[in-house]
Image (tube, rainbow over all chains, first blue to last red):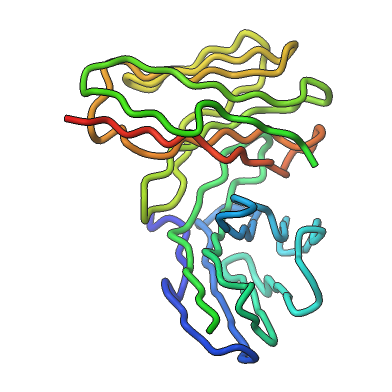
Amino acid sequence: DAGVIQSPRHEVTEMGQEVTLRCKPISGHNSLFWYRQTMMRGLELLIYFNNNVPIDDSGMPEDRFSAKMPNASFSTLKIQPSEPRDSAVYFCASRTGTSPDTQYFGPGTRLTVL
Amino acid sequence: ILNVEQSPQSLHVQEGDSTNFTCSFPSSNFYALHWYRWETAKSPEALFVMTLNGDEKKKGRISATLNTKEGYSYLYIKGSQPEDSATYLCAPNSGGSNYKLTFGKGTLLTVNP
């Protein structure tokens, strides 16, 4: 099993640019989570999908952030326009959907907005 | 926002020492508690999921206990090894939610050879 796959692993962009982060969950998992890790706030949930449907997006910081899950094997997190305060590590995690099951994390994308 | 506290924030031990750290969380609306191990430059790796008061889980030299009535969990490492060096995170499910985890800030463990 390849685990959760995220791309890119590192992204450096300039303020105002659009950034798209990608995630492929573990095959057979029907729940997907996007997290953001910062020094100040630790690991915080941005959005949760179940069976490709967004269930809880209360953690999405503002309208500049959007996430989609067009099918069971792919999700994107988009920031448009990006700002320096968006610099963080973004993790994707997936689980089978059977509570209280473990969430399996991807390697993360380290985003730097200059 | 769920208040999850982990202590100590950091810990240095010698190889072979046994150690333990604490996770405190609100006892109301408890659903489950997760422990993760997070090595630098890697992703969080699941250790345990615990649901019942009095639960004890073990994985090799690492074990954990759970007290849902008073809202705490202990993680123990017996005979620490340098490869145990990592940040250990606890995360209760938030407010009875079956999916939303609130992560503590973690305990950073450094094991010196």
